[in-house]
Image (cartoon, rainbow, N blue to C red):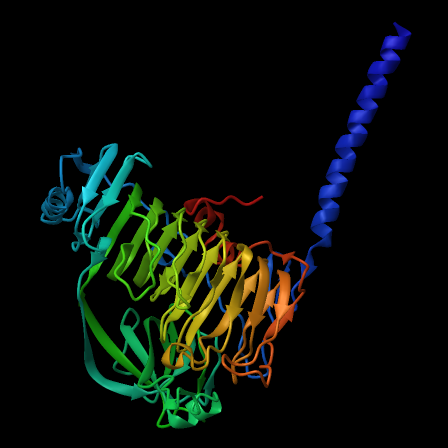
Length: 518
């Protein structure tokens, strides 16, 4: 008995030692996380370093359905459909339109549910009314794309935007990126809750400052960007002539380059669609080894959508798979698989971000010769990719003509790259594609992080090879690098977006989007 008791005591001692060492190792791993010089977590609050002019990494937590941290609702089923012989598109469309004629109840009308099985569709299915959801029964519900090339599902309705009253001059000499306050010459015609458009002219002085007035391709001048850069915001508060808006600015406003200056204009919006989504189904196209200029099947497009979602959707062999235009949209747990690569030097974008407050969460892509994510011209975020994994010969690459406000957070691109770059004469003058972008705690094969004049791009706490390049088609000079902070060493907090969301709305907001604090 004494020998047995000794063995038991020894095993208990070893177990206690193992538990202690494991806890110690976990604490040591946490302690080894680096601190970013630009965003630090101190006493439970985020502290932001500013540039000499007051710019900072913005609060990205406003991205997503409902403005971030809002749970996607479960909408009551109204109709369940079963596959029929031949083209099923008309049957699905009729059911969607019928629900679209029902009255709204708490913002929703109801869901069309596809039973398990394959639904061949030779034309698009379109959701054009608010409060309508198309839901499958999991991966067993498949929209099988047939017929001529088309988009599988569209969520779209035209939006009318009308100015109200006169535009008012913005009087600030400089508004830093990440701020949410501006001053106008006379705020008496505005009130909290007004929707406004802030527009700054694209002047020759600014284009020259950006180095984008000398683009030439095949001996032809390329035009980088013209017109205006406009963002929509809602007034949160007014104090005298100082106006606070709901979402921070993704870009700066420098009066030295935008004479006669930025304008604040109240607008009235009508139309579009709200609270609409696609979920729990599969979209499959035949294999398409094509160039992007050839006809091809695409999966989903949104236009005029506010507060919408795409979640738990599996997509096979579509090209230019998902295009998102609208506001406050979540793309959650979407899987895209290509069994054959596209061909040609011009690459399709599996995720095209052309809206504001867009949130791509836990998405996966497997494919070659693609842009995993690309942004459109003049896009103003915030746009967030969180915990996405993209495998194959492809890139996350903001694509053209000055998008701003992108966060790539905790994403993995083992075979490709993350590029914040000047695309120069590519694509008829894409030029500087992105400003005020952040890669936070990412892992990629490589990074091309370039610094635009008068703006910043950051790669923070990320792992992968740093590249230096000249503008495309040039061998020299190498463009200035953007900020690399704690490169090769993950930083705390693990997720910038989730920490910002928790700080703004609390732990409940994390739970609403499928995360819990550890």
